[in-house]
Amino acid sequence: MGRQWVHQVKSENSAIKGALITKLAREIQVAAKMGGADPSFNARLRMAIDAAKKASCSADTIDRAIKKGSGQLEGSHIDEIQYEGYGPHGVGVIVETQSDNKNRTASEMRLIFKSHGGALGEMGSVAWMFERVSALEATKAGSLDPDEEAIEAGANEVEKHGEGYLYYGAPEELDHVRKGLEARGWKITSAELSYKAKNITTLTTDQKKEVMEFLSELNDHDDTHRLHATLSD
Image (cartoon, rainbow, N blue to C red):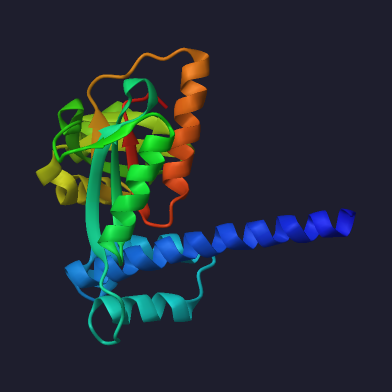
């Protein structure tokens, strides 16, 4: 019985890793399609490759994703599609997806929302609850004043995030802030256009648990790329 349980856990872990690799490869493919196959001139691709390497994605998988995105190899067409809706207890949600089958993704997204007491909405139905921003995750060794670093790099706001910091700026300032942070010795781990909730939905402990179960299922979906909700961290 113990061996069977261990085998089951290993299988589940393998499935989780496989899904992650698929998501990382899709981002590399999309990044290469949008900005070209040379990571030296494509910051999004460079960071996608770094994330894939960090997750132990094989060099062959990375290379094939780049070639598919840049048209050097045949591959499925990946569309970036955004869904908006309300989750349980009125939480506003934006789901950014990367899909090779738009009809399937739309149907499955609708089902996840509905099964948790929420509903998908039209484009713009909850976008007003969010601010469009540049978001950059970065780390830097040694003592520092993050507010001063933000001012010097041209960011509007900064907050502690895991082992590093998350810098926010205007959407059109993404590259400017990235270059400013790098010039000051920061290592950028992600830099992308994102959404920041303007107003946080107030929930009880039980309600938040229900919402987190809903968000977890959304996040685990194979086509989900980024997920935003009107919740505090």
